[in-house]
Length: 173
Image (cartoon, rainbow, N blue to C red; front, side):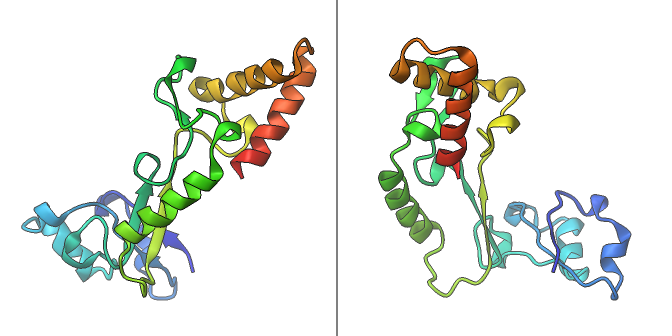
Protein backbone atom coordinates (compact mmCIF):
# COMPACT_ATOMS: atom_id res chain seq x y z
CA UNK A 1 0.00 0.00 0.00
CA UNK A 2 1.54 3.35 -0.99
CA UNK A 3 1.96 6.01 1.66
CA UNK A 4 2.22 9.65 0.64
CA UNK A 5 3.20 12.78 2.52
CA UNK A 6 2.17 16.25 1.37
CA UNK A 7 2.47 19.68 2.91
CA UNK A 8 -0.73 21.09 1.44
CA UNK A 9 -3.98 19.77 0.01
CA UNK A 10 -3.29 21.92 -3.05
CA UNK A 11 -0.41 19.59 -3.97
CA UNK A 12 -2.37 16.34 -3.88
CA UNK A 13 -2.63 14.53 -7.24
CA UNK A 14 -6.28 14.05 -8.17
CA UNK A 15 -5.96 10.31 -8.90
CA UNK A 16 -5.24 9.67 -5.21
CA UNK A 17 -8.93 10.18 -4.54
CA UNK A 18 -10.03 7.68 -7.21
CA UNK A 19 -11.62 4.74 -5.31
CA UNK A 20 -9.84 2.23 -7.57
CA UNK A 21 -6.48 3.64 -6.47
CA UNK A 22 -6.12 2.38 -2.91
CA UNK A 23 -3.73 4.28 -0.73
CA UNK A 24 -3.56 5.89 2.65
CA UNK A 25 -2.65 9.53 2.84
CA UNK A 26 -1.21 10.68 6.15
CA UNK A 27 -1.09 14.34 7.17
CA UNK A 28 2.05 15.14 9.13
CA UNK A 29 1.87 18.87 9.70
CA UNK A 30 1.28 20.24 13.23
CA UNK A 31 -2.06 21.89 12.43
CA UNK A 32 -3.51 21.81 15.97
CA UNK A 33 -3.38 25.64 16.12
CA UNK A 34 -4.95 25.96 12.64
CA UNK A 35 -8.09 23.87 13.16
CA UNK A 36 -10.32 26.89 12.54
CA UNK A 37 -9.13 27.03 8.92
CA UNK A 38 -11.04 25.20 6.20
CA UNK A 39 -7.97 23.26 5.06
CA UNK A 40 -7.90 21.11 8.20
CA UNK A 41 -11.60 20.27 7.81
CA UNK A 42 -10.93 19.14 4.26
CA UNK A 43 -8.42 16.58 5.53
CA UNK A 44 -11.10 14.45 7.15
CA UNK A 45 -13.51 15.12 4.27
CA UNK A 46 -11.02 13.58 1.84
CA UNK A 47 -10.23 10.65 4.14
CA UNK A 48 -6.72 11.87 4.91
CA UNK A 49 -5.44 10.33 8.14
CA UNK A 50 -4.61 12.91 10.82
CA UNK A 51 -3.28 12.49 14.36
CA UNK A 52 -5.96 12.95 17.03
CA UNK A 53 -6.23 16.65 17.88
CA UNK A 54 -4.02 17.46 14.87
CA UNK A 55 -0.98 16.95 17.11
CA UNK A 56 2.48 16.58 15.58
CA UNK A 57 3.22 13.36 17.50
CA UNK A 58 0.15 11.21 17.74
CA UNK A 59 -1.67 7.98 17.09
CA UNK A 60 -1.23 7.94 13.29
CA UNK A 61 2.28 9.28 12.70
CA UNK A 62 5.33 10.30 14.72
CA UNK A 63 8.43 11.98 13.30
CA UNK A 64 11.79 11.38 14.96
CA UNK A 65 14.48 13.96 14.14
CA UNK A 66 18.25 13.44 14.43
CA UNK A 67 18.86 16.08 17.10
CA UNK A 68 16.19 14.65 19.41
CA UNK A 69 16.52 10.95 18.56
CA UNK A 70 19.51 8.91 19.61
CA UNK A 71 23.07 10.16 19.32
CA UNK A 72 23.49 10.48 15.57
CA UNK A 73 26.91 11.80 14.56
CA UNK A 74 26.89 14.98 12.47
CA UNK A 75 28.56 18.34 11.88
CA UNK A 76 26.79 21.50 13.04
CA UNK A 77 28.62 23.38 10.30
CA UNK A 78 29.38 21.55 7.04
CA UNK A 79 32.43 23.77 6.52
CA UNK A 80 33.96 23.36 9.98
CA UNK A 81 35.44 19.98 10.96
CA UNK A 82 35.67 21.16 14.58
CA UNK A 83 31.85 21.34 14.76
CA UNK A 84 31.50 17.55 15.13
CA UNK A 85 28.69 16.29 17.35
CA UNK A 86 28.71 12.68 18.59
CA UNK A 87 31.91 12.01 16.66
CA UNK A 88 30.83 13.75 13.44
CA UNK A 89 31.15 10.69 11.18
CA UNK A 90 29.32 7.38 11.65
CA UNK A 91 32.62 5.51 12.15
CA UNK A 92 33.15 7.44 15.41
CA UNK A 93 29.64 7.02 16.79
CA UNK A 94 29.12 5.16 20.04
CA UNK A 95 26.50 2.68 18.80
CA UNK A 96 25.74 1.28 22.28
CA UNK A 97 25.04 4.73 23.72
CA UNK A 98 23.09 5.67 20.57
CA UNK A 99 20.82 2.61 20.78
CA UNK A 100 20.27 3.13 24.50
CA UNK A 101 19.16 6.71 23.89
CA UNK A 102 17.03 5.61 20.91
CA UNK A 103 15.18 3.20 23.19
CA UNK A 104 14.50 5.97 25.73
CA UNK A 105 13.54 8.50 23.04
CA UNK A 106 11.04 6.11 21.46
CA UNK A 107 9.44 5.48 24.85
CA UNK A 108 9.08 9.25 25.42
CA UNK A 109 7.61 10.05 22.00
CA UNK A 110 5.54 6.86 21.66
CA UNK A 111 4.48 5.98 25.22
CA UNK A 112 1.71 3.66 24.01
CA UNK A 113 3.19 0.16 23.65
CA UNK A 114 0.28 -0.70 21.31
CA UNK A 115 1.12 2.13 18.86
CA UNK A 116 0.45 0.85 15.35
CA UNK A 117 0.99 4.07 13.44
CA UNK A 118 3.89 5.16 11.29
CA UNK A 119 7.16 6.22 12.93
CA UNK A 120 9.43 8.16 10.56
CA UNK A 121 13.12 8.68 11.26
CA UNK A 122 13.86 11.96 9.51
CA UNK A 123 17.63 12.20 9.35
CA UNK A 124 19.08 14.65 6.85
CA UNK A 125 22.56 15.65 8.05
CA UNK A 126 24.30 12.94 6.04
CA UNK A 127 23.26 10.17 3.71
CA UNK A 128 23.96 6.49 4.46
CA UNK A 129 25.91 5.87 1.23
CA UNK A 130 29.32 7.45 0.69
CA UNK A 131 28.66 8.61 -2.87
CA UNK A 132 25.44 10.38 -1.85
CA UNK A 133 27.33 12.81 0.41
CA UNK A 134 28.14 15.43 -2.19
CA UNK A 135 28.11 19.23 -2.30
CA UNK A 136 27.87 20.61 1.27
CA UNK A 137 27.80 17.10 2.75
CA UNK A 138 31.27 16.34 1.38
CA UNK A 139 32.66 16.98 4.87
CA UNK A 140 31.61 13.42 5.75
CA UNK A 141 33.89 12.10 3.01
CA UNK A 142 36.83 14.38 3.80
CA UNK A 143 36.63 13.71 7.54
CA UNK A 144 36.33 9.96 6.91
CA UNK A 145 39.50 10.14 4.81
CA UNK A 146 41.25 12.18 7.52
CA UNK A 147 40.27 9.52 10.06
CA UNK A 148 41.80 6.80 7.85
CA UNK A 149 45.00 8.78 7.27
CA UNK A 150 45.33 9.45 10.99
CA UNK A 151 45.29 5.71 11.66
CA UNK A 152 47.24 4.42 8.65
CA UNK A 153 49.78 7.19 8.25
CA UNK A 154 51.27 7.94 4.88
CA UNK A 155 48.97 6.13 2.43
CA UNK A 156 47.94 7.61 -0.89
CA UNK A 157 44.59 9.32 -1.38
CA UNK A 158 43.12 6.57 -3.59
CA UNK A 159 43.71 3.88 -0.98
CA UNK A 160 42.56 6.17 1.84
CA UNK A 161 39.36 6.92 -0.06
CA UNK A 162 38.61 3.22 -0.63
CA UNK A 163 39.12 2.42 3.05
CA UNK A 164 37.15 5.49 4.16
CA UNK A 165 34.28 4.68 1.79
CA UNK A 166 34.09 1.09 3.03
CA UNK A 167 34.22 2.13 6.69
CA UNK A 168 31.64 4.89 6.20
CA UNK A 169 29.19 2.63 4.36
CA UNK A 170 29.55 -0.14 6.95
CA UNK A 171 29.18 2.21 9.92
CA UNK A 172 26.23 4.13 8.48
CA UNK A 173 24.05 1.12 7.82
